[in-house]
Structure formats: structure tokens, C-alpha cells
Length: 261
Image (tube, rainbow, N blue to C red):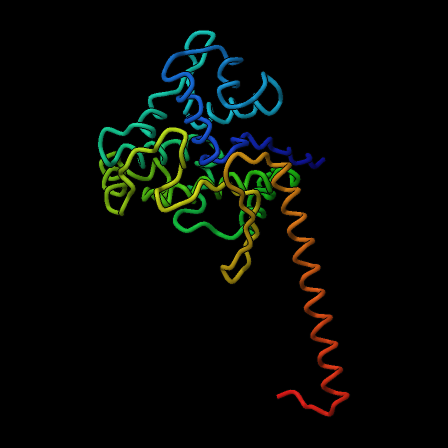
């Protein structure tokens, strides 16, 4: 009798690494390096208390190695401090790359797809064929893509960690231009030529083009999506009006016997 294939639980960070680093900055601004109860830490990130959303955020920061336990309390890790206040030009991109490859699933994907990321459909097919629930795959792909995009922007690349010796890893991180300036606490988490953007979704096409929805600042996701819907509806109305006007103008030219060039 054939056994049914077990559906794998996507044990991945529910936040992308850029979102996780933004929350680490908020914790550092409020708690510095001191250990604190989870209830205090989540309030440092803007949550009202321990709930589904805040517990998910805490879990994601642990998965990236940005938070660590101190008895019954938690505090930001040495890796987080190397990102926030690097002692040399290599520390920040190294910390980002280490955090990106800390989650087991992200390490697995980096091993399977080294170098340039494949399009979303390739990632989706791989995850589903390896037993992941189709309903969870979109969240996995979005978090992984935003995470690896940050690694690439910071000059670290995302080759699997075990494929290189430590000295080779250092060489790769030093070989490309990087942003050596430490981040401003409370300011943008990306490189200085980037805005503080957070991706809400992305769709990739086979030819390499893509559509991406981004927001900036402290907008709540639900509010941001509401405004996206309003914007799309407005743009559709504008398109309908332009099409209607073009049709009317074409009919008027036809009635006057004017041919289009």
C-alpha cells in the first residue's frame, strides 16, 4: 500500500530579513543590549503585548539569530550588534549573510539555487514537490526573496555557507562594493541610496520583468493594502476614461472624414 507523502511544515521566518532588522533597531533604541522579558521586548517593537503577531516577530528574530535568550528573558544578539555597530567594513555584510542563511529552509534554498534567484514559479514548484503546503509557499518565497535581495545589495552574495571555507567567505564579502557606514538608529535599514521600503508582494515573469508592491514608513500592512486597492481602482478608472475619450475622438475624426496617420 502506497503511503501518502507527508506535508512539510514551512518552518521559516514569517518576517523577511529587512523587516527583522528594522525591528532589531527598534529594540536597540528602547532596550539597548539589556535583557528584558518578552512582554517588554514586543512593546519595544510597537506591539501592545504578546499576541499572534508579536509572537511571530519574536520567533522570526530568533530564527535569524538576531535575538538570544538570557535565562527567562531575551536580548539582541552579538550578530545584531555587528549589524548595528560594525567594527570594520566586513562585519555588517557578514552579519547580514549569516542571518540570511541561519534559517534551515533558507540554507536549503541557497544550496539548491546558488547565484541569481530563479523566478517565483521555479521556487514554488520546488517547494511543493518537496512536500510543502501550497497555501504556505507564497509567504516562504516572499520572505526568502526579500532576504536574499538584501544580501545581494549589501555585497555578500548568498552562496551556501558550507560550500566555502571561512577565509574564502571573508574574501567573497570583501570583493564587492559595500556600504560601510553604520545604520542610523531609527532611520532607514537599507543602504544609504535606498529608501525605507517594505515589500508587500512580488510577481516575476519568465522574461525577467516583475511587478512589485512596496510601502515605506510605519504603515500597517492592512492599511497599506487598502491604499493599494484604492490606487489600483483609481488607475483603472483613469484608464477607462482615457480609453473612452480616445474612442470618442476616433469616432469624431471618422465622422469628419479625417483618417488616422
